[in-house]
Image (cartoon, rainbow, N blue to C red; front, side):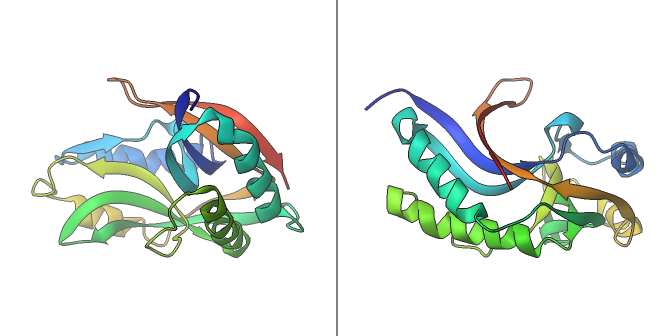
Length: 185
């Protein structure tokens, strides 16, 4: 076995200035939130975990198969919500409207990567962008109300033209992501 990397396949969002108002409102409430850095925003299509670097060419091959025939498309960054529910919030997210092609890519990727030994996802793919994680789920005063204020907000339109195999290095300051393989649509 070779060297391992912590990896996932994603559609990268990058900085979305329109989200700043929502993030600012979240920062103003007294909840234990750990924010995703705005330049790290992405949609995880498949979390892989620790991956042997020797598998990267096969992963890239399945990324290509999952995107085969999919043309670049646009989707709307719209609405906000939480996982798993408002009485026990662990994740605050922004939603995606028109993400069916992304959902199909994620499902094909999930199916294909089982051939290389990756476990199939237990949950159905739910297109979203994680904005923050809740540290102490009991410390969410004001959080439901703030999230609900933005639940119908249309933030921006995103163009999907590639998916990326990302490397994630965990540091005390948060994860550092780097591109391993890029597959254009």
